[in-house]
Image (cartoon, one colour):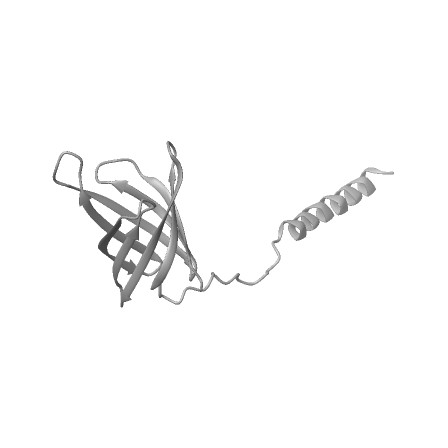
Length: 143
């Protein structure tokens, strides 16, 4: 094969590689995948699990009463004690702050913040004011 033929063959191979690579690198258009549906309503009963590293997962209950973006929250502990507090929803974000008696007197704030994944699931973190964040997750109790 002569020099000119080699250059033509090399050019064809190079072009095929570039074009082939371009076609292989192109991502297929699968359309947009819809986000899970959230109606904007969290009202009702939920089970919450606090991921406590020292004590293991701790289950409790939540009852939300919703008026627009405002929440009344009742938190039920495994020991049977209930606490009431207020919260809010902003889009897919949820937050409530619980003030409870502190050891040694006074009060401490437990700050819950999270993301609503869909109508039946949410997750986030909570922390005692000034402390480290601990993960939590909750699922709606469907009756």
